[in-house]
Every structure is written in structure tokens, then in C-alpha cells.
Length: 129
Image (cartoon, rainbow, N blue to C red):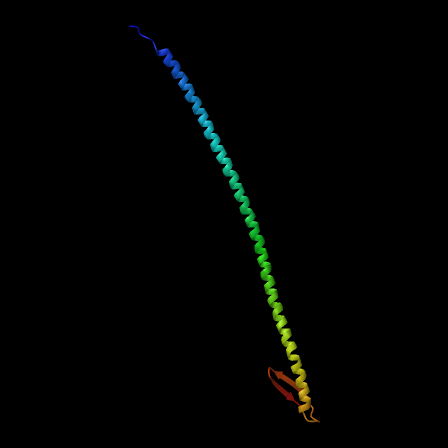
């Protein structure tokens, strides 16, 4: 029986499989590195977009806070004006009463009496003369 030496064929096959393994390992490493790089780039872009959104929201909030402060100032100014308007209306409303009071004093006081002072405290009047 003859013996066949298969060793050189096996060695060539082992070298071929080893080269193929290292090639596949390199391709896999390159693919993994590109996936990691793409993921890093995508996450960086998303983070920058979110930071831009946050900055926009912060600026809008500060702008709206300024408008809110202005509105509150306008409301307080309106309240002060309404108080002044009410005071003026009260004064305008009591004007005819004073005129009517003097007219009635002339009619009620007898002739020849002169008065020196007239004081008013709310609804009460004090006449000296």
C-alpha cells in the first residue's frame, strides 16, 4: 500500500484559511469601527440639535418673562389710573352738592347775618358767624 503525503496540501489549506480569517477579522474590525464612528457622529449631531433647541427655548422664555413683567407693570399702571379716575369722579360728583349747599345757605340764613367760617367734616357742616 502506498502512503500519500497530505501534509503540503493541508498546510496550504491552513495558510489559506488563516489568511481568510485575518481578512475577515480586519473587515469586521473596519465595519465595527465605521458603525461606532457613524453612531458617534449621529449622537453628536443629535446632541447639538438638542442644545440648539434648549438655547432657543431659553431665549424665548426670557423674552416672554420680559413681556410678562411689562404686562404686570401695565396692570399696576392701569390700577393707579383707575384709582385716580375714581377720585376725580368722586370730586366731580360732589361739586354740585357744594354749589347746592351754598345756594341753600343763602336761602336759609336770615338777612343781616354774616358768617366767618364754614367747615365741612364728611356729612356734617359747622358754620361760625
